Length: 356
Image (tube, rainbow, N blue to C red; front, side, top):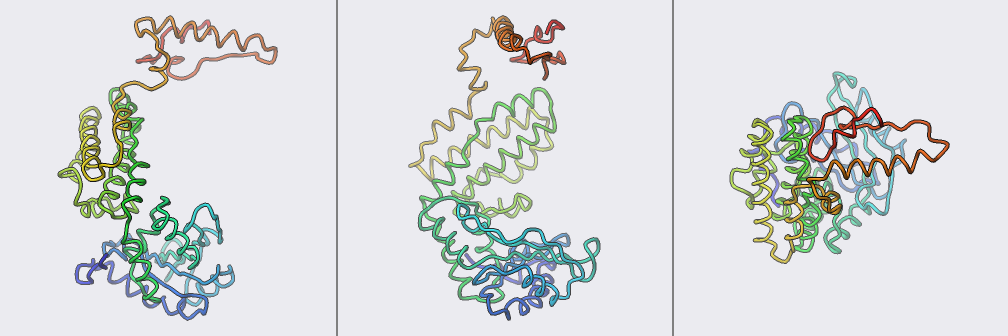
């Protein structure tokens, strides 16, 4: 993976890299620090005037609060906010870190924000073994940072890490695709679209698009960190549905039902791409689940939909009888859409009767 050429970087990125280079010696001179990098949008070369600077500091052993505070003071910060103390969870390799925001030139309201993330060398090494030797999927944030960061100190070790994440084994790609290629809740998109629940349907659209991009990233053997930079992430996807970025953007300006149909088409095209490029993955069961028009619990009930209201009435009576015999139960109320007489699909108007 090649670093972004400085000639292609945004002006905001160049300015922030220059600032990071001024900060780097303060941390690099500490005997326990072996690597310092600048990551995030600055490391990718796409920062804008809203971007902060994300600096990663990698230690031989976890730094104490006193050590981190002293180094921040040497940077000349006006305000320091400790976001998290040092933590380690062996079940989440690579996740242990201490995170702090420091502000230069002013307080939290008017100073320039520099986000300092502290990790140990051992945590990174464990993460790389789990992800790339044992092919056990974990959060890909660290892999993305290592692949697109700019080393400021400890270039040799940072480059070694970069080469490791660039391997991207096929087995890892398969497992990541299997994790994300799940659209069992697709029927909710259709339901919310038909009911014109604008906020809920937009949430479902965003969730589905995030999964699509994650699947495509695995097919392309690249890492996607933030949906915030969607255009940058999608531009890197050589294997993708045609005009993906344009179609994704247009979706949020369409009527919910039209957008749902367009999203459905993107999902089908994503399944086709997985079948083409990772043929060893059995996608048919997930494809079938994504095509189900009603929730599983309705299918399993094997209820004749023409007699659905009678079935619901009988079910409610059984529930009522089970609880009213308990002397501790004083009041039973029906809530949800049925109690408000907003009846659709699987909800019976009889539920809203004052008798219950």
